[in-house]
Amino acid sequence: MIQVADRLQTVEEYYFSKKLREVRGLMAEGKPIINMGIGSPDMAPSKEVLEALVTSLGDDKAHQYQSYQGLPELRNAAANFYKKHFQVEVDSNTELLPLMGSKEGIMHISMAFLNEGDEVLIPNPGYPTYTSVTKLVGAVPKYYGLTQSGSWLPDLEVLEKTDLSKVKLMWLSYPHMPTGANANKEIFEGLVKFAKRNNILLVNDNPYSFVLNEERLSILAVPGAKEVALELNSLSKTFNMAGWRVGFVLGNARFIDAVLKVKSNMDSGMFYGLQKGAVKALELSSKWYSALNKVYQKRRALIFQLADTLGCTYNTDASGMFVWAKLPSEMPSAEAFIDKILYDKSIFITPGTIFGSNGEGYIRFSLCVKEEQIKEAINRF
Image 1 (spheres, rainbow, N blue to C red):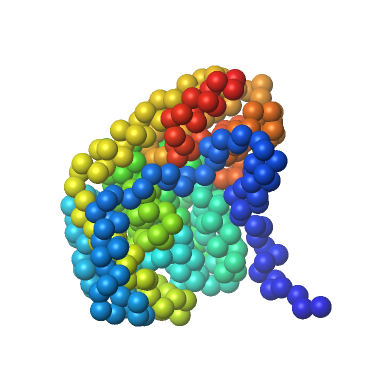
Image 2: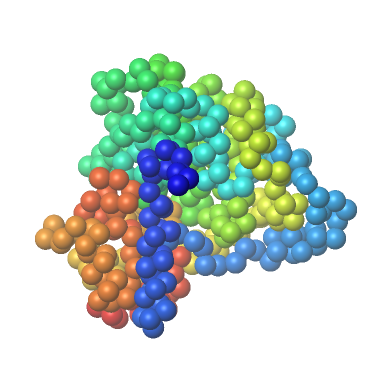
């Protein structure tokens, strides 16, 4: 019998891949499921973006292979976007690389920098893909705890006291997923100094900056950060383009070149029309962000009502398209709680435990749910 690769023994199928099959099964049985689990924007991209995509289909070479580095106008648009919104300047030819979504970038960066046995600092709680990709490339996850009492921020004093001799890379994600916590310039400055002292590559995964967040920060805005840091960003959340799979990575030319070496052996360039639409998205005015956030503000207010109904507590100042809520102490485990809600009330909510052990006792609501559905969920209680 042909056996699968040993690396597959180190990871499990992605939680949402499994759980959504279960949810779809319940829906097939006629259950009126309200899905508050996944952060897939349910609104459309802007009209200008869609028009740019459609118009581009008649362009010469629109259906041919595209450059591994993306269209020059896409790189320029992304560089201008970072200069305008984050006060970060990058060379669009050497310090920025378009990606087929930032999730792709997690794998590419890991393949470019990690050797077997290297250790990787991963937030707990944090995005599960950091762990699975680390294991797939033969590296070793080393978790650093984030807690509510510590405002879900890294404790550098604690980290400095640990053995960092094998640590090569550290994942960050601010605004933080799943908690919505925000870093500040002082935190980023401390992290850059920490990385320089310990020869660690920092990667800030930054797709939520524009969702219910006024303090937009990039780690690359810290002086000297390019020496030790990369940043990932995505059009998925900010522009309702999750299925388009468009993102980018920014950093110094040497780091970007290393990522390109991996990427150029993994794909044959992004479809031309997607790139032209992405250019238009990155050029949208502030009216787009204001309109988007008005919708999320209304939805979040209703999610707060639902959380109150369940006896949960939460941070009203958190950013991003989720509400991270602490269960009452008398509740069972997070997974047992959400399963009960799923089968008793036909509502799917994400348990905090899928993001790490520090997620026990918490649940996560998505704001990618229409107001009418949230009101219906409230009524079910």
